[in-house]
Image (tube, rainbow, N blue to C red; front, top):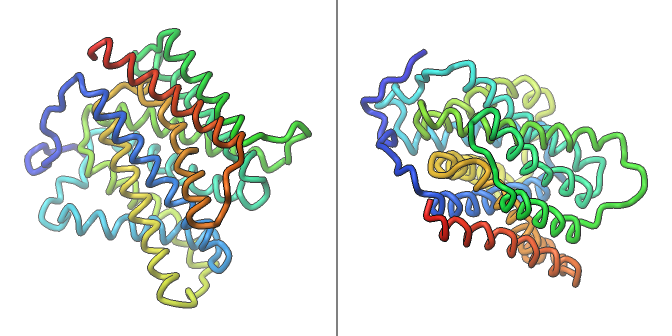
Length: 301
């Protein structure tokens, strides 16, 4: 397959120096991912996990087709790098499946602590794979941000459950997904990347999703299932645009802001009142992100 740039609306040149806009988009993407997790947590009591995963991608595809009018712009379904697109789509599917499997067996604190190790992997891989090397200040901010996450999650000091391997797998898939997203933004359209990843994941999940099918009990459940596609698809579209505007090491520390959104949603949706350590840890996370933001403004990149 190859890309035909005519008709692809978002292939206009993006300024090389747009890290601040990229940072803002990655923060909004993290909000969408938090809304997705909160919705899935609510749904998992009545709907099988694999069915939620499948319908999340089915609604993702439907919304993408309608939003970008794919029937009148089929060039969006073409790519110059089909292998990378397929691998990236399976990474996205892996993130979702393994994260849901981990939540079934582990405490949320443990899964969160493992997942937020992703910026280390992204920053380490971005140098050799993308030529985007992180300096000591960025590494320091990542380390500080991760320490804030540990303060919030307070993972246990005892032996980890065997299912921790699910969280590790989800984290690794996320890191590879971020690197591949940055690579593909140089050749493929943002809309095309969003649509193709959804199609591959939805098709791959169809047998599993149908095998565990349980009819949702009411309209509200259907609405929430459809909303998973909005939150998931919308978040990943923002994620793609962010990586088109800024290097992966610049964006990596702001993944930690998801813990702030999680605290807020936990209080608003589930009545979880954050304790003192949670607020302290969230402050550390925000502070590390603000430092990176300050450095980017000073450097003027």
